[in-house]
Length: 388
Length: 226
Image 1: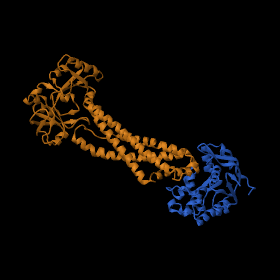
Image 2: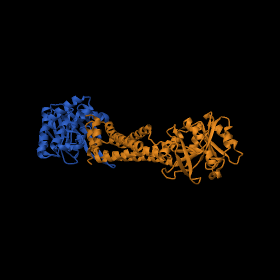
Image 3: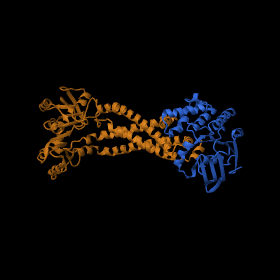
Image 4: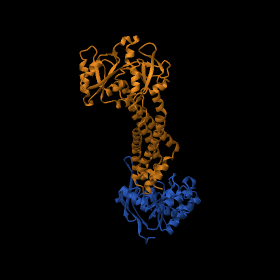
């Protein structure tokens, strides 16, 4: 036997209470991991945004389109290596196999040069350039829509009326874990030449430029926007990161609330743990008096109580992490990633498990601190008199 | 008895408790000499200060004034930490309600005071077996307190009190929670500890039969020895 034996045995002295506390700690850690994973997943696209790319959109709103000739003007700006553009198509699956996916009308000659997180073979690219209604899909989208190369694909749009018939010419390969594998790409000229898109003839949604030096991205952005200052349609150019963040703008407030919520969950866990410890110490006051009487110094009593608190937090934290791994990384994650949408990569990263466990243990110390301090300060004769 | 040197010497002890601002004197100008190797019983009505006196002798409480010398050490000059260490080496405690730790076996309860020493695991085990053999419970060493009778629990508590070979055993109503038969067994055991192992025993009791076992009987009333 050693001193830890006593602390360990105390853990299951009130089995029901300890199990409930362990569940509370595990649940708090699970919720913390879930919320933090959602935040990490939301920000993943932003975090992985290319630093040498700029996005240019209408100064008023992303929903307003720009004249197509702007792309030629941007390409004249010094330090801009390459530029491409895209239009939002508002794609919908008429058979409703997918609730949501992104569809873009893009420039077949330059898109893959600038957006290099999507890759196709030269053969596919050559075929696409020769096929006006050719479409290239992400592998998950192709799987969900049950099409492969050579198949016909009919898509509807929120913006453009009627059925849009494409021929699948290739599947792009996602080169980043956050790259959307549920995107439909088709040729901008196919959209532009269709009478149903007459209202947006020779218009483009936004432009993406690759620049020579990311350090000077602010200067280059200013130079691009200055080119259109006197035009009817003015532009706003920003880093790709800022562009991504502008999409998350409305969500960022919600994410902040989630972030605070995850901390509140840990605070509640601390209070539950602290309450359990306080009850345990109160019940064992007489016993601590006996230990002090036979010679155990206050530091040992402090250690017993703190050790018990940390042990509950550690065991509860480990259970929470194990459940989080099973539920998030093996359960929810594949389903969410398969469904597409905003979570292209929804996994709890290893460091987050470490943070959750460290937080649980740290808060275990905090929760146990006051009961431990009070327990250690008990006057022996008072503690011996306490019988409840 | 008086030929033996004193192991406990109290001089001019006063102890006053306070209820709010109102002082309540419990011990007044009390002197006491306990010879080494004696078996003393302290009797008296409830509230007479018996337990307070016992606590002062055992280093659990401090007098308001006066000096306390036990086993050659001046307790009034010690810090709380020094007192804790001193108690672990000098005093064996026997309580009325046994006070065994319910989650530890009899052997583990007896081993508790030894965890504060430098003894190795095998050495501790040897000491524990010896102590349990003295109290006649070596066959119950792996039993938990709930699996023992009251008398057996108190004998385990006595084993815990003697396992670190203390100079003095203080006992606060050691037979108070026991039936007559169990109480007699415990008293016989304490008598043996006094006579065979030469332990000084200072016992507070209400039980006249228990007091009869002691070689010296004292009475405390209204804070003064009579």
